[in-house]
Image 1 (tube, rainbow, N blue to C red):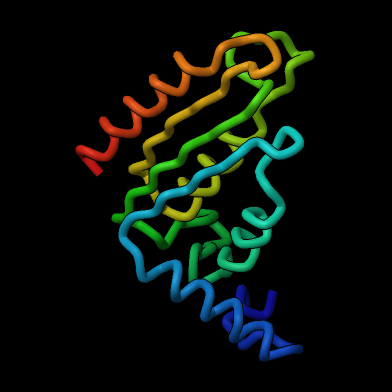
Image 2 (image 1 turned 30 degrees about the horizontal axis):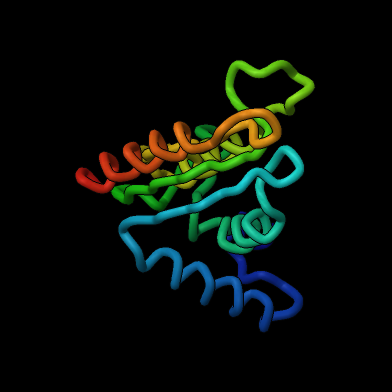
Length: 148
């Protein structure tokens, strides 16, 4: 919270330096590729941890008390491939819910990335042949790569 107030963070400076180094490596790219398997109806914990580490004020976002958040990673592109073995659009609630794509999409937009391409491969591996969905996901990835 010290950073919000314009001060240097207090406490363990080694942890802050590590967060800054991680952010700088991330921010050095103009394009991002995320492969995100569904993990217990959400994203893998290690991706959530990464997001928590780099999402610091003055790095990924700024904050104005009257206007709210502004993403600072503008002008970048992201491609995200979502996979799940059971959840899929149009399946009943007993097959799960999508907390994966909304979470990552919202974070990317919040960080300032408006150009986000999403590809989903979500066959119901318990009951269906995955090959048709795999071919469709591969075709979508090839199409996305042409404009990325």
